[in-house]
Image (cartoon, rainbow, N blue to C red; front, side):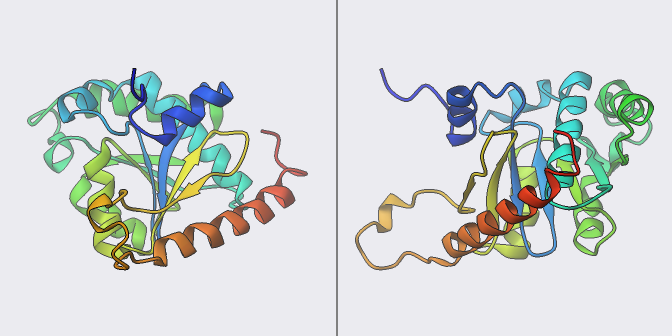
Length: 209
């Protein structure tokens, strides 16, 4: 018994038969797409694989085009410190990330760069250098989102046959019924859903998805 999914991202993907979906967060100056969702960190590291990165990059590219960004500028955040320093601090960048990025350049014409050290790439994206960053795991994405826009960011599920947005925080059952809940993220989620429905409708005539 019980709920056999870690979150709504996986649950809705299952219900709709969506084979390639992803959790994303949209803030005022930052968009982040996650390679994995609510899994232990040790498991998340094991999911940093070439094929998964390619699928996520293609999904992010396609969805951002549907949102009206004609040629999305994507960046990939490194997993290891300083981008692994040429293999000194890890192999995932050279073994998995670089081949994935090169594959997207060669076949799918995805405008992607990286991997970049995670301690600076989110700042660069927030200043307008990139349209979205691919993050390796949950907290790598959530720390910059919540530092920059907590309470005003929006959770978006990519890859579904409909637009789905949500708040940028958990259920907070501990304050339920106390009149303490902050509604700003819910308002932002509703507004973004309306905006995306408009941009997706306009771009669907020009973008094959």
